[in-house]
Length: 150
Image (cartoon, one colour):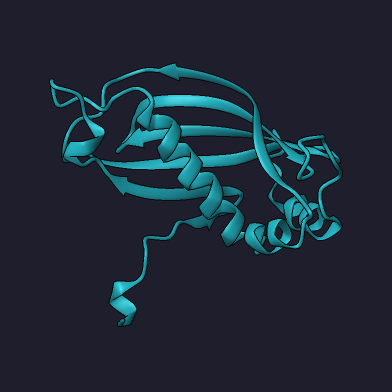
């Protein structure tokens, strides 16, 4: 594998995480428009990448029996259709961090056009499914990334 064979990765631009993706045929319905549930997949990929970019190793904590994130709440609005071949960017920002949960605002953009937006609450849960405090190092990693309204 060469360096050009690496999986796509997002990046932080200030406190916003940006994750680019392309719409493929499998993402669309019969009319060539992105099927509504696929926006959730796009946002999930962006959230996972955001954690990686913040230095958070979800897999290691999960494999050590520490727990994992689960979506506890989701409010999504579809604003414009995305279509086959479009390049989209999922812009994510942390809006609130609590001991056992994180709120994330996400926007799916095509250039300057808002395609979809969501507010997502993810809870950190123990292997048995009960909420638990996030690892202290995760909270420390989130601190400089939390969006502060001016």
